[in-house]
Length: 289
Ligand SMILES: Nc1ncnc2c1ncn2[C@@H]1O[C@H](COP(=O)(O)OP(=O)(O)O)[C@@H](O)[C@H]1O
Ligand SMILES: CC(=O)N[C@@H](CCC(=O)OP(=O)(O)O)C(=O)O
Image (cartoon, rainbow, N blue to C red; front, side, top):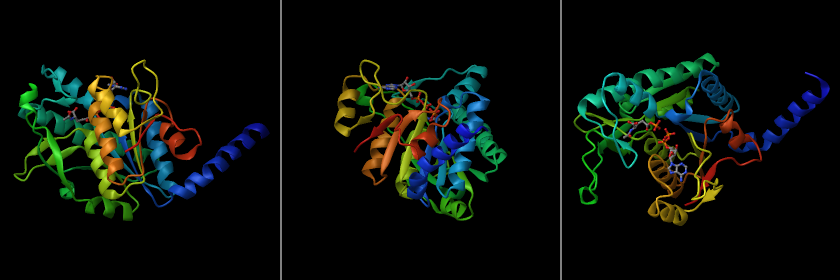
């Protein structure tokens, strides 16, 4: 490194100092969307960012999705994916695939990536330690919505296992599978799980990584900040639709439940999480309650 580059590196570290001081000891929940898991380079870089956070004293908790990965396996098995309001219609056979892909492939890939970068990650589904209790998500038949099958919503979270991992300096990596009273598995949208986990942990930040720059307005422009009222209008006129619906709903829920900030941002950009945490440049869309 020449002298100028070294000075620049030092400046970057100094710029990060107040942020590191602010976030040390705090919990940050990062939702890692399936659409942000694009290539090996980006995945490794995400894992490194998580390890760095842990090393500067933040407690990162990763909640991941894997919608596209589920879709690809279903396609290979000759099953079509169908969504209602951003939720996958989940029959029993689909539920098995969801559990295999999320709890198996995707969860262990992220755990492994973090561990390869020097972190100590432990993978969980909502079944482990009774972490996520779920009940069937009811659709609105009156609005012409069909039955979603084994899709669940969170009925309660028992964070004991997450606290135990944090206290041992492990990084929890959570797949959004819930368990019903009868022991049945439920497929829960990962955004909703991330929001509830952030709320119960009293997280400082909820970061939702996806495949858009943030929430886009009617002209395709990036909105740097949106309020609950603006969101309601954009949902009503269709500007916010599909997969953005559960995302924005969970972000609003989280800030209304005491999470200080919720940000929807582009996980396809390298080091998006670090830029959000440690620099003066805000990225993505901040959700205000
Ligand atoms: N107003 C909006 N701004 C940005 N994205 C939107 C908006 N409305 C709908 N979307 C859609 O939401 C998608 C993100 O949700 P989703 O596909 O479920 O991502 P993830 O897998 O990261 O959870 C975007 O790719 C986009 O197609
Ligand atoms: C009910 C429901 O839709 N569950 C999602 C769970 C995975 C997920 O949320 O993945 P992303 O975050 O990558 O979209 C699904 O089956 O696709």
